[in-house]
Amino acid sequence: MTAPGLGARKRVYSTVTVTEGSAGFTVALDGRPIRSPGGRPLALPTRSLAEAIAAEWDAQADTIDPRGMPATGFAATVADRVTPQRDHVVDEIAGYGGSDLLCFLTEDPPELIARQEAAWRPWREWAERTLGLTLVLGAGIMPVRQPEGTLAAFRAAVAAEDAWTLAPLHDLTSITGSLILGLAVLRGRLGAETAFEVSRVDEEFQAERWGRDAEAEDFSIARHREMVEAATFVALLKS
Image (cartoon, rainbow, N blue to C red):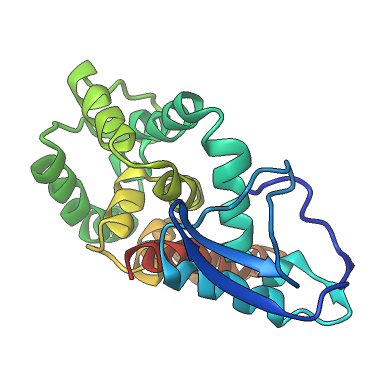
């Protein structure tokens, strides 16, 4: 979930500073507070996040490269996308609960089924205990309908988050295909790298059997980086 408008442009500032005010922390370039691409002010909730964003701006060379500014990107997303359309974002994230990766086992081969269950069962059980829900499992490509109470519990868990945590939760969930894993990372029960590995049981099994594809590997590396960036943003919100 990236904010629009963070394109490359020339660096025209010299100093980057962090100040604290009644609304939160502000990052300023030559004394002028930064804004989102949509023109909204960025009042940051923690000093750690503000300092991380300031470091991103300070590290830019002659041309600003938004690819090296993940914390800035998440903050802009909060301002321009999550806050103005919170209910839509909550529904989008909660929707993953109805088709959570961890609830869809393969039909064959037995070795892959065993790997899936070893990696996924503990986190399904964690979700059932923590969120007070019951999960229905499917096999193969057949659709599964989760109980209404389960869908409601998933949505309540997502809706309880504020705009700052919804932005990384969106990425943690969409990258893994699992709201359960996204919530586990968000709540500090699972590391981002482990969650990514858990979500890729099928891909790793196929790679072992048929060999690795360079393009698929590059895509996986990029998604892994995005996963770590989202988890890092969560950590900055809590420190």
